[in-house]
Length: 429
Image (cartoon, rainbow, N blue to C red):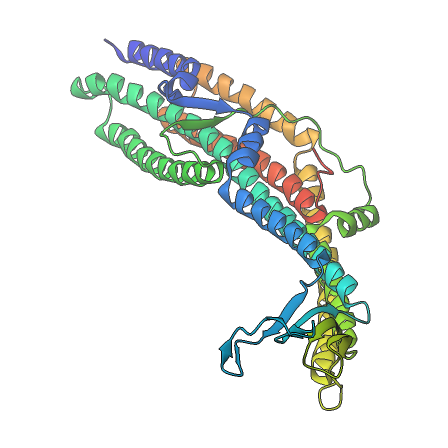
């Protein structure tokens, strides 16, 4: 085989491997392709952290019903056991009067100053806090889910590129081996290709490790214990634009961001707690109608007992003062949360605009033209218009450019998700 035939066979191998690049990355029957909608549905249905948070919300709602219940009445009784040498001396005397003595009283606690209503309000607000905590947990886990999903898609796209390059270099080395043995090419050229292949294989191994880590994180969120490989079904994204202005996004965040609303609800809770502590200055009343036989000036005595503590020493001043400071502390935290919310939305908004600008039509046209040029370089290489080193330099540049394109697309997805995360709802699809 002469040198010209060698280059023709090498070029044919390159073209063949280009067509079969996707087949090289296909996996066995244990692969499942999931869209983002499928992943989110499985996540909502099976994630144990969300399930535990739902139980907590239900528990707090149950406490609202408990706060509405009145205190149980208390039964007090005093029965004679032994008197005048007799046990349980009950019965009637010869004159028809009753013998023996017993006392019965039923007491009911009456809470004053609206304490019962204030406790209901506290329980209701506490349940609302649990709901916001659930929403915040859902938001954080969903952001992690999206990040893992899009990252895995980018990693697999990079893997396709590296596998295609690996296969092309392997075929080149196979074809060059015979030419090296025949003395038609220098050994340094062969070793140069071999060195590139070893470096590429090392990069591919590191990438596979990263894919394994991402798969593990994604399966943990989805509670998948089997060995199925998840393959994202990413559709081509259309043009991205931000329809809302910045001020509108901030207002939307104040209405939908669970972390911010959680802090605001904490202010309401602390204010209600202060109101309750103030109500404790008013003593509760205990009413107790009672009946006493043969132990009073009347044989059958019916009375009404009323008791209440006198607020002489303990007027709950310490707890009231502490509750007032808690309100001020939480108000300061809300102001801090509002500043953070503004800056977070502002940062996410600017990052998205920069990423959209980077993905403009001019750059997309550049990638298309560069891909066409790569095909021309293959033809030039076949026709011996460029040498091996020139082709390999362009080959490596093209591969790196494709990886940067994948990273750029990932950055766009993550930037959209970041803005949605900070606002609290999906304002960008």
